[in-house]
Length: 342
Image (cartoon, rainbow, N blue to C red; front, top):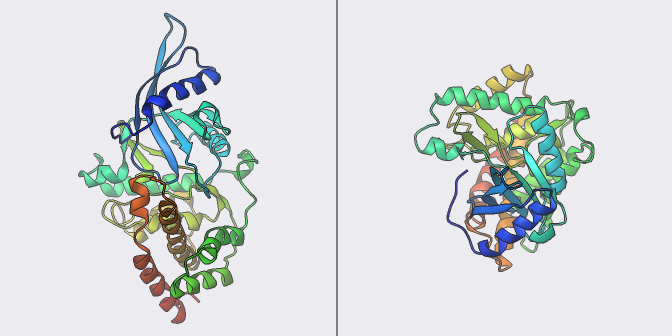
């Protein structure tokens, strides 16, 4: 994980964390090395080292704490995320093994999940520093196959309380409605994009589990040179093409698409690994949706900052960029007017 110096509140957090671990069955837990991590706009994330056990049988482990921030969030509740990660880990997906969850928060006062901490760096930073020790195209094909491996999981085997029933229209409304209902008047381009999405909900033959935020900085590149998938709080039952469109939204040389493979090469690698064909018309819909959804995330971040709470550098970064997104939406609307998406 990528770490910074400990933030404020460390002295209070360590004993509260130890109390939660004791309540969770860890004998005589000792917390050390507590430090706040960078990244994460909806969660408070900390790394720490745990020592526990009876005298003469002490054990140590590097762990991660993720707490919900004191804000309204569209993210998955911690208890559901814990159940999902447990199931994914048991299914053989490369995820950090979850160890403890308290949806009430206990001594920490906020709902939390504690999981094992895998040593490594996020893929985006690894690429920015010159690579991850392998050919970029090879990594790109591996990640396309990994994303496909998520999508081919049998949803019938997943614990049923984790997800709502599949409904594309509801998922679109979930992210677009706040943009129209907020105090700020939505830009005409944004309103037009939302109207088009609502009128063109695609049929999905094979709903599946989608990660919801599959991009380079949510892939941990472990010291063993293998990818580990992080940040599942936006996971849901949806269209696999929705997940692909979100991944393809991020296109710098340090991202999965364009950094590792071209868009078409990434889709080809995905199609080969899943033995499916990506519907390009559905992809167009979900690419426009991805722009609108990101606009909603930006709006949520800047709105929270205006509430007067200091939620860190991620929110400051997310509060910028609406003009760029609206320009990209305009390009899609021009294509629609020209019949490209018909």
